[in-house]
Amino acid sequence: MNKIKNLALIDDDDMFVFLTKKTIEYSNLVDVVKVFRNGREAINFLNENSRNVEKLPEVILLDLTMPIMDGWQFLEQYVLLKPNIGKKIIIYIVSSSISPSDIERAKHINEVTDYIIKPVTKEHLIEMLKNL
Amino acid sequence: MNNDELRLLFFEEADVLFQIYDKDLNCIDVNKATLKLFNTERDKLIGKNISDLSPESIASGRYEAYLNVIRTGKTLIIDEFKAWPNNKEVYFRIKAFKLGTGLGMVTKNITDLELIIKRTVGELEVKVKNLNDANTSITEMMKMLSNQNTQLNDFCGIVSHNLRAPFINLSILSDFIANSKNPDERELMISKIKPVVATLNETFNNLVESLQIREELGLKFERNNFEELTNKILEQHNIEIDLCKAKIQLDFTAAPHIYYPKKYIDSILSNLISNALKYRADSRSPFIQIKTEVNDDRICLKIIDNGLGIDLKTNGQHMFKMRRVFHDRPDAKGYGLFLTKTQVEAMEGEIFVDSTPDQGSTFTVKFNPKNNIT
Image 1 (cartoon, rainbow over the protein chains, first blue to last red):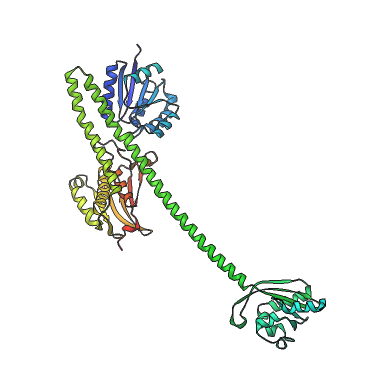
Image 2: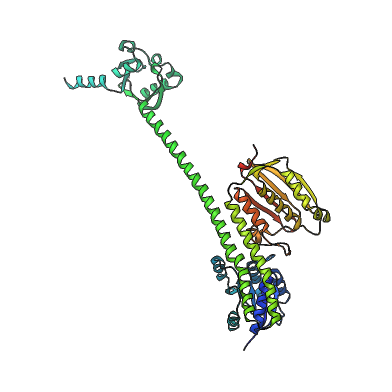
């Protein structure tokens, strides 16, 4: 079976990051998980490595509520950055929010492939692989 | 009776005032209604000039206007002519037209009409006022409803996000524990439960507290001295203030006191002051101004710092939400401003923030006038 080589997890909830990493580990579907504690850290990384295809993630799991730069702000910045990035990146919003307004808002952003309501399961990861 | 006699009788008996003047405005004839109004005899009027009968007609220009009617043949209408025959205020409508070589004048008493109009206008004014009052209360009610709606939305947000998040973590943990075959890993997972429960507990308690603030009855309002309260709070931060060499300036001269539940005003001050200290900029020593102002009869509490500040363009709408933090600090939990706002709004006040990143923030609490000390 195919594997996701690089997956980026952008989330400030340490516990959720720990548990999601475990889920990913058990699933054996991902090689490397990189964690960013807020949107700013992730944008900086993408900016610095925009030509470094090996380091860029294929999949980003993006939380919405974070300090410094939240998920929505990250998406705004990402749209600006996208033309310079030498790799197709699939972005999933991963949020504990079941608020319809968040889900609706996410639908209107082209860069977002899907909205996953936490937790992230092995089934989600398999689905992501299909979308690669 | 022939037609001429009938016409004469009609002239005599009509309810309106008929007067006939010659080309020099000397009175030729009047009818009964005229005599009745002036309470006089016919021979006292006949032959008299208008300027004698109504001396003010010259000063008011009417005399000249009557002569002009005779000269030009153009009819003159004077509306709402006010006079005081027999010391009673009466409104007239006068129509003066050329009659032969002289002047015919029909004068109608429109006092009743005036009264009706005045009464109607008065009634309309009352109705407009009532409508305006109703409009004001509808606007207030809409404002209240919109506030409640916002609070409800915030509450939904807290339940659907802040409470859900730790529950999700707990459910994944319990799955892992149930499925794990490795005892060390099980131990690790079990040890992770405690902090999640602590978060859940904290969020839950804050939520309950915020609901209680909104529902709290029998709150004791008292006269609070801003300076005393502030000094007590500053004492609690003594070590921190010394350590970062913070300069703190107090000025409560504009409004030294407020009528408020002590625990709320204490909590509001305490939260805003500890934030101003906590989010200081490391590159400069903190300078914090704490003062009161009075604007439009409302006491305003201002806490001005020169700290980290915050980008309101991107974070403004989340400033006072639960578990929203804007700086990567381990001690930032996102309950303080949420509860402060709840406490301010429960007392029908407002709180807002002005801030520039890396320059500082100004928090303003605008209290309700009912909290003024009179």
